[in-house]
Image 1: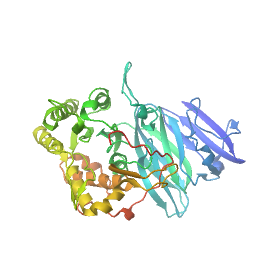
Image 2 (image 1 turned 60 degrees about the vertical axis):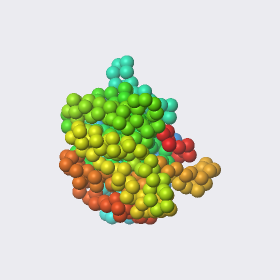
Image 3 (image 1 turned 180 degrees about the vertical axis):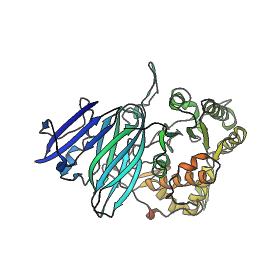
Image 4 (image 1 turned 120 degrees about the vertical axis):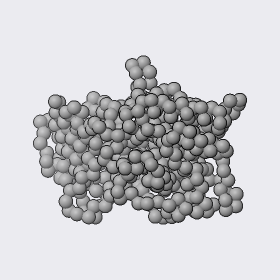
Length: 428
């Protein structure tokens, strides 16, 4: 066992960080009232490769130390070097009449706006899947240039703290025996790491219980054809018996032209191949038809995916796997909101809504935080109505959802992360 005790002086205040590692377990204590140290450092603790932990992404200056822990009025990132695996993270917070939101890695949402109504400390646990590009010694996932800096694929676990609660400590421990839910798909599924872009894959994490972790392997711009190779090989490398693999493709597959391609050609063949390989490893595939684009003709939504949703339905029936018809669900949702109201579910913002955003954003494919959360709830609704055992991992306090009666945009909000980009994700 290796132990490290560090006492840091932050803006004249004592800031205690107790870190211990035993089989890759860590405990970080930020309460100065508990300060016990063997060595002191008279500087703020930013993340470094040498220490393997610290406040990251240039946010250390935002931290204010108190005797009960640290606080901040802006998003703060804290990173820890960890090997690939599933981890239980427990954050202890306090502060009556405050609230905290916890995200991890590339903006995966775990604890949304938890309000504290007691003077006691509160523990907030959640499971995180940490994965690396490497598959074998000489074979790795072929990441795109835009993915090279993505937090999901680096060599550490990054936690993001938003809100005004006091963070007393963080405990991180590896867990075995957890089920894993793998997500395979395109930009409507992947963890979008930059605001204001979002996907349902990074919101579903907030609605699953302590017995499962989510490994979102989806990639912006991906099709079944581009996912074949190192991407699906990475999923199969990590896949354990009775793990789940949710597959949603269609947006980019329909752009592949030529003889032998199309919904009932290449798409059907590759989808069948993925399902077969997952089953051979003991996994449980679940198919999800592609989310609709916001393309109205009057008050009705115009189908934009051609035969691809139907091709997926046929594969699901033939292979006897669970199907969630998100194409149908999102059609109901968008039409219920209407042509104008549905804008709020997408990345559509006037110029200067975000720092450095000089032009209006108007995207009819990619979702806002509100839209991504709504689609996550629709996916969960479909699971609940299915025979899939994955539904047993949905938390009991996840509300029921009716796609024909979606929530209004003002009913949901989540604090924005610090990182912003106006450039649309690949595959728009």
